[in-house]
Length: 331
Image 1: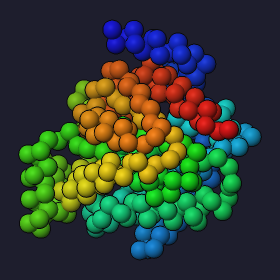
Image 2: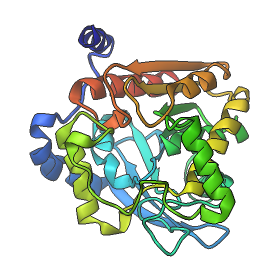
Image 3: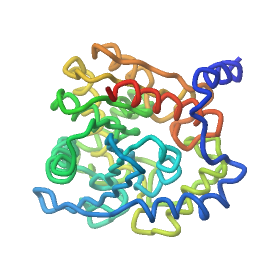
Image 4: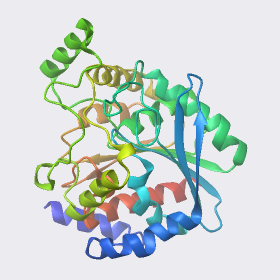
């Protein structure tokens, strides 16, 4: 049944298939994707109000008329999205990909760079506001779309609530609006944070290590998972371990606040949901999506959390829907 659903969805988006498939990704990554990124991208940095440095990449395709802002999730850098950017190269997009504080090449808040920590979740939003005001808006008056994955989806939604008239569309990929950890686990994290252990790794967590593909809960695509792991080998500066207790507490609070205020979002919203997501809570995503005036959900059958680096069949559907969404609301 799941395969039939995927195939039927592919029938809706027949012209939006991937440019590079799993069978040829290894060769095409070096011969097509990386040359495209190097030829069409520039890189920069912005110092935000507390002195932290945020790194970003800007990739412009031919005849760029629209702007897409890309915010990744926990442990992610813009390096991860090279194939995704290549797949969108014919859409006339300028894509800004930002490494948020604590992620990728950007500043970390603790001496131990591998601990994912933020003192207050509002830091993410104020960082992004400064990025938009100082990097994006001075360069363009084009239609602006915002795409956030996981943690990035939460920050993107928060920005859309505070600035309802600045976006043409909001795309959320497996947004981390609630945890699958369960009430008892969250109670323990709150207790550890309360008793001064907020800067410690979550119980059972630790520094960066490569999880074998067979044990990962991110994607069913071995080749794309291995490509993501290779980025950590090639660029050790982007490595990140498990979250800290305080980070988890802050993200839970942020998710609740965003869902409560979701009615403030006036731009069209697309939520991509992974059917087999074991990281982000789909019930929280449903609760959020019920509040904006125009929010559409697309459930991706069989998908783990990382829908944009999943198998070809799943990515075809996700890419097709993203392309359709941007084209529909560009006019």
